[in-house]
Image 1: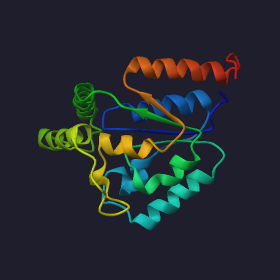
Image 2: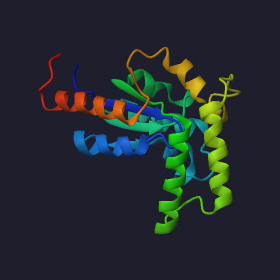
Image 3: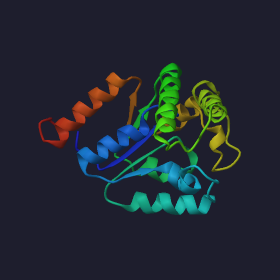
Image 4: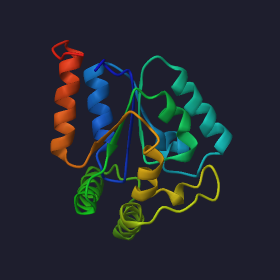
Length: 189
């Protein structure tokens, strides 16, 4: 295994994508990109136009090294194609739900919550649950993010040869240990 320079992290809400991306970025000295910032104005506002998103994704994909993280599927095919490794954080719904609630509480207490209030948290949990329990459906458009589910993710990633599927924190730790061995030259090819 050679050290990856282009890493794409995918998974549902609360799966740990952003945390892993920041950790890898710091460890490997590779810039991380939150795809919510490409998909939505300021990361949580109005949805950006598809041509603008595709242009930003193409600009990242052309770079020598990058880490991207997001839930999205169809408008990021170029990242999936160019990634040295795709890390799928496929954790159970109960763990994701707990993380979403904890993150919401921490952000609220810190005064940094973009999605204030219990009503908004409830909507986020309902949306997230659809990802984890919904069926794969055909997207209505190349940017139909509402059609993204765990099942749809499995279908899309089945065609990708470089997927590491992590179903628990333990799986992530194992993969990081393997990656760390490669990064410092202690692992055999």
